[in-house]
Length: 421
Image (cartoon, rainbow, N blue to C red):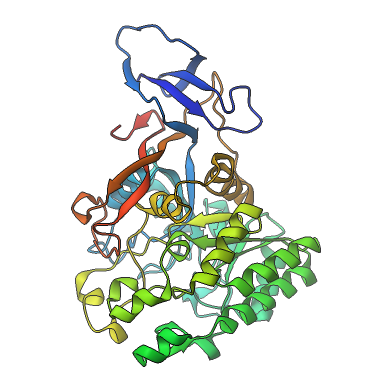
């Protein structure tokens, strides 16, 4: 794979070429040179990318590829294609498959099957056996086999288990990811507790459920002094808590799902199960607070929370439909559109390229000569109408069919491979 990316603006803070428009020559998967006027080179394909930006490959901190066990919804191969289409060169897979990822062999199965793919696949193993919250899973065995984080995904761990898991995993440097929720307040919810829940007659999930769960995690992080990454952030009150905790030096990081930045609770009044997600869609006030949290650096990452579902469990009565949307292909477009195309490129670098890798202890790729090419190319202003017919994901449970997006992924380069530009 030899290629010249012509007239592309480089976003890579701390490097020589940051914020400069250059030609990038890639040969055998490495950056041969970065120049202002690359000449024609025999055998090297040229791509005119005027108006496009390039930055170190994007990293999705939360995705489900459903294998092993539910390959009819998604498998590793289709998930990788969908991730690349969404601009991601690396992804962290959740362990909540039908057969949970909780052992050495489980971890190695995923990593071996995805080796040398266009997208680097990383594994988050179960924190507890079968994600039941009773016994701690084989954390160290999974870690030495390649798992880089541990979580029970969207199941809440009791404080004692979370403390023990943090203290144990800290001895070998793996990150714990914890979901912010209080199940006794949120169980069987269908919609944000609000005028929308009153109008529909559906059981509402109060913001305080998330905020109580978040406060518990923050206090545990403060008590142990050990970093913890928090998922499930969706309310204005949660943003306030995270901001205050960080100002006190408490070692927490947090993520938000892209669709929680664009879609609001009123959409659920249609009873369309494509809007049934966890955490629920919140109010416009919450969305504004989340967006400010991103621009202020309070929220560290934006994730896809890619959750493909088949038609049998999604196209049914709202009460009985499964949570989740197929979203990895639309994550950037959703984020960019939520900000009306005005999200600063350096903030995008932080939430998609830099922070996820810092949190997980991984090296951040660099756009410099002699470096391995791991990069994402996008156009910040290009508009397009999204169609589920174009999706690589096996499942089409998206609420964005027919949506006009601002910002478009052009392609990715990684592991001496590239997606279609």
